[in-house]
Image (cartoon, rainbow, N blue to C red; front, side, top):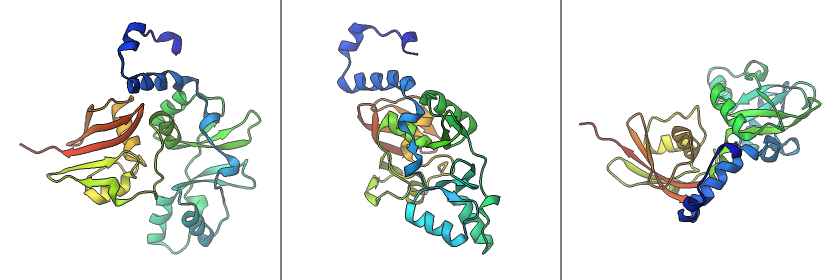
Length: 248
């Protein structure tokens, strides 16, 4: 991909440092492999397929993740991905829990896969997590959409790692938000209709709307809401302003 992009050296000299950093980030993306950004199996929280309801709830509470790979006999035999929201929906209707019935089909990718290709596949399949395998078919770890976006725009908060000051109400239907804030938390704080089932963080959602690394003051829209990039740090989004467009 690098050899397909022609950049004028004179134009590079005229760019601000943060703009240069953004270009470097874009150029390096195709050279980064899944293996470099994945969460290794030793740091991954797996659930056995025969885990009891109590064990599942304890795991959710202690780890504070929203998705877990589920295995049959060993962690090299992952049979699916368990979503916390599916567990909660089930427990509202029933006191029993069989995670075999709840797991979603896993998406396996090789560790040598480049992350720009993985990002494209995850978006195409509308998935947020993949299981990374080595050349022998063993599980090496997991990689999520957040891991990729983190590589592009900077650190992202986990879904439970948020504070009220991450969302500042500016009045008149507008908010100043930390790009790392959890999307579901943001929707609850603002009563905005956001795709909480499709994205974990505001930064990830806005990045997907742009389809590229945005620049400061650049804006995009979604269902009557305007998202304006307020602060950038290199190719990392720091803050975003949300404005509810007034109906004429």
